[in-house]
Image (cartoon, rainbow, N blue to C red; front, side, top):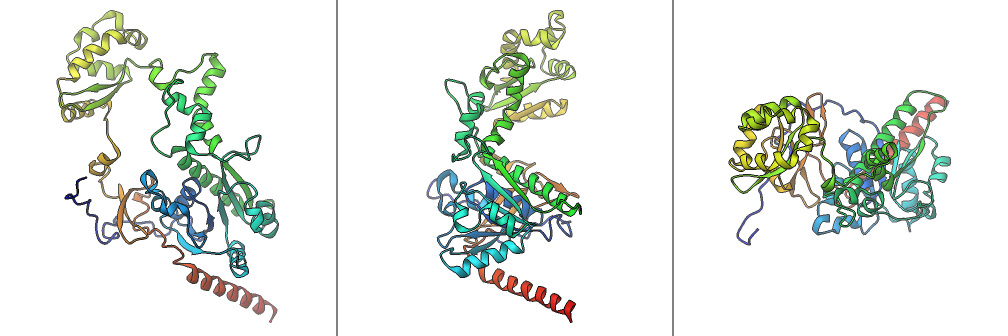
Length: 415
């Protein structure tokens, strides 16, 4: 962007494009979550819980979550993964604030943290001590590794991608390549949500054994889950899985092609019907009538002969024409987009596809909605990123009111 260009202008009022019908009460309404997390994995968990209706109170130190000040590719981390939360600042050097933290936990359903083992113990907030004080509490610790030989290690998304073999499968063994987003951190937060929902369901079942839970989510194990398909392939066949750039294709056409306009397009022809209709549409009668190409296996073995001819036909058309023709045939395809291209994509721009949120500095920004439609509605419209400590006094006052109300009920029962 040059100095004379203006950034995209977003609606001044982030609520003006609300979907016509929003859920009257979100499914986690009434659930209180206390969050002490940073970076991506833990905050992702809290952000999803908040969008499902939970009250998520993010506790930060006086200097704030360090993620707030990240730049470059980390610029979006804090606003993206902390939308919809309330912001509280506590200084654990002060007894009053330590007491306030315990008041928060006493009335909470869930406690989220992603500190290294032992760090919270020094603050009196270790899982073992909290389970004794608050047996109802669901504790979800987002860690680098689950229990075992590596449990003491810190981890990053890139670290676990290298360790798990995902980077070698995405690139090659000689040139490993991480995937282009914080995929494991985000997915780890999702596993946190899944675990918490299971614990809430168990607790509300009324079973005698139901209560709190001590949950540990591992970033490495999350990535291990992603590469399980390749591990099991080796377990079953004894063959070392080939990386994505080197793999044996399961279909005759499953490739990226150049187009007339200089852009590129991916096309996947994966069924018998697709093969026949693709050959008819693009004048490849020599393939559809070739008896040596009767089966998918025959065609895979002949890829070296088929692909140059297909590429020749594809190169005659631009992406728009190809998209229309392939869409009509119900054949899988995609232009090779970049993230910024999605901000003008007609499907992304459908009502509810992007939600309008507000950053801590008051600036509006657009975000893809959670990939969930709840009774036909999208979630996450109008969320705000918490200003550092903005809700501290309000939350403190609310807790005092709750304690007074609880004491009043006890006094009434003894009257």
